[in-house]
Image (tube, rainbow, N blue to C red; front, side, top):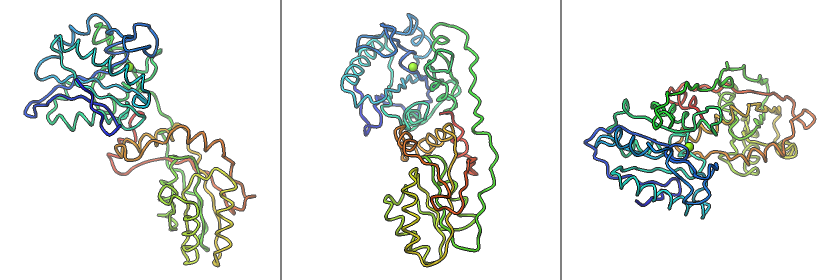
Length: 368
Ligand SMILES: [Mg+2]
């Protein structure tokens, strides 16, 4: 068994699939589910620091899930595996070793390993999508996902339970499959930050042109609000995600305002100095009168996290997740906007994200 590196996105080994056959998909997490560390440490010390979850693992898989109509998969998150040489070498040795033991018992596993914090990392669904792309006929009623990250007290995460929810498969913990323990009652957490009704949009006066700066952390809903403001008040949207340089944004804003078009700038702009600089440069070069407005996104970190994951999930990795460091930088430089820096009106806005597209709404409501 050799793991194949797919564009540094994930590693996989998938045996030949008979596309005439309808398969039951039997999916297992690896660490804490099929195996655990011998040392009892959270992370393995080396390639030998593992043992099966218990003595029943091989027999139970053999007896229950090892017919021609079963497809066995390991879905494992191994963050930064390709960036850490020792971790990678240990992991490859370990997984080959595990695989050869399974093969010795006539058990043939397929493997998908997520190596980054992206669409492939559980609870995002990329690894399952890889399976769906390969396996054309699926008996999903008799499929399941088994993992130990189930949000129980003492669990390090709930990502396995969340994945099962997101891909709509039955979920079991390893104690249930391999120890015959009853399935614990698992509850998906309440998410008050998703319960909202849309607040009225900030009101702009329409007797003059306007320059509106919508600022806030990455993935806080700035573009979403820009579109709503544009639908109500018009104005050309200049998005810093698309127009990368500040100078270009300023340049375009000047042209638009001189041509009697209002402007909406959608950019993080945590620093007062940057906001002032944009406003002043534009003021100096625009003949027409215009008002300056600022809307600061006051989106909660929970909702930002939801949006950040949603964009990556919905775009199937085309939009990358914004790393934690970007937020630390934003908050490090953050200065609250005030009228003293020359805005005529400042609003705060906490978005209530809703999609009219049903699939988008469903994916937005995934557990991340
Ligand atoms: Mg695990």
